Image (tube, rainbow, N blue to C red; front, side, top):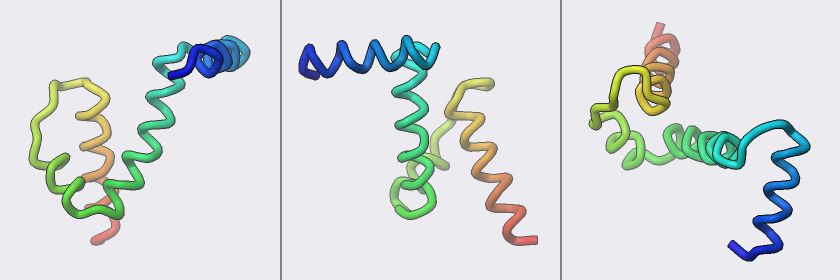
Length: 73
């Protein structure tokens, strides 16, 4: 990332009161959730993997499974 972009990102995060890591994670998560719903290969890879209990990935997997099951009711 270009230094000026990194500086701007850090400033925006400071204004929002979040860390750069948390801000970037939130952006990536939105895109990844979209991929889970639109790309069968991504969904299959994600659902086939095991993730540590309590991890962000495990929580997302549980959320996705619960949402999928509730759609079938």
